[in-house]
Length: 224
Image (cartoon, rainbow, N blue to C red; front, top):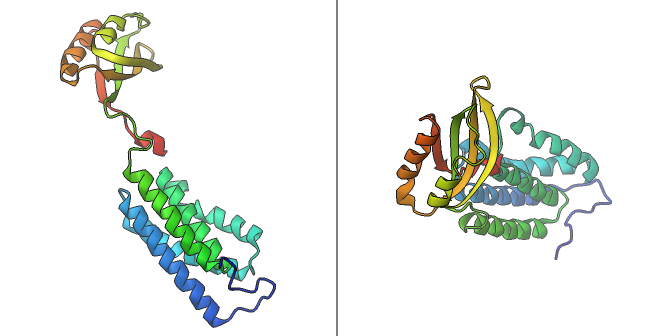
């Protein structure tokens, strides 16, 4: 059932086998592209590339007579060219290697395995993206506070954090404005979301009315 339809010991390929492998690659490519589009934001160019990629990989595999070492080295380099100039998210990188794996399978003639892998991996992909798996807590926020350099930040805000937050951690401290100020990065969970303005107003009284930014934790950080 999961055997190859291609005689790997022979270099002869019939037109029927080539067409069958190509059609399977195109079908799997459309499935991968649709899964990519269904699970979030997408671009037309990248979606089209996911349809074509399994076919291209299959062609390379057939040209090197099933030599996986050569084909993987070549395709691995070309598949990552896109990310040299444009930042790619983990979702896009995963989709690239998904398409590569299917192309490798069809190029070797394992068509049943390729289709089954497309279905199984695609279902896992959709389920994980459509559930809350790995999501940041909705009530968690990122707080950035700017303070003058002569202000000791170690305990100056502790009483306010105890009053307004249920959890807080100081993740990063960096200097800004040529070293004349500090920028403190906190992750916090407010006890009461309706008191966010009161919390910020009290912080402003402590930091000399300098910049304070309170925002939702961005999931983009995880994607990079």
